[in-house]
Image 1 (cartoon, rainbow, N blue to C red):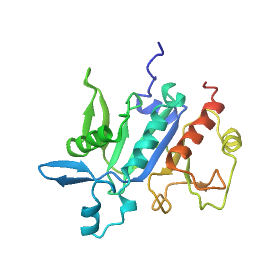
Image 2 (image 1 turned 120 degrees about the vertical axis):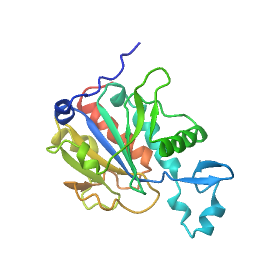
Image 3 (image 1 turned 135 degrees about the vertical axis):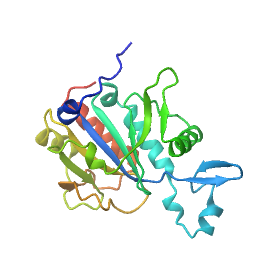
Image 4 (image 1 turned 90 degrees about the vertical axis):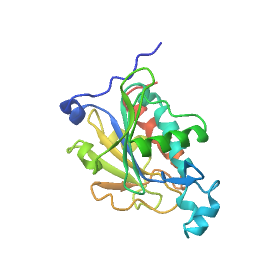
Length: 225
């Protein structure tokens, strides 16, 4: 049986520990009242609500975040304790994901979990007091190592790289931050803290594929099978 990931705990460890930090940017995570209950706003179940509010259905795609989190949290990189994920929603809610979190497999269960998180601000493990998901105070830069290189990705970026070569040439054992868009269309806006913008495909990638390629590159760099 594999050991639980060794997560940096102290401020010093968080500043210096070797790991990939991924920020999912402008995720469509928003609740909407439906009868007596609240649901996660999405373009399939709430087309009428979106039309009434004159909202673009493309801005109600929480499934993108769900798919990206499944890819990230299931990765060998995360299981080795070398990944930290934050989610910044389109409404500027900032969420920290504990590396030991198991993301629900189905979208229905994921939606219920996100509604609970957005209303109660934290989700605890069933067998301990440890918080698996929690809403934290903005800005996200307060949680990023100040000396780490910070990169955002875009299919429209002028610089196109082969991601394995780029990672091998630029990073060793220091923490590094990648900002990935968690939305259907457009590009990452207002992430003024980044050092560079890159693309690592000649084609637009789904969020899940982009996350998977990135994890694989760092798994290769750090020898994780």
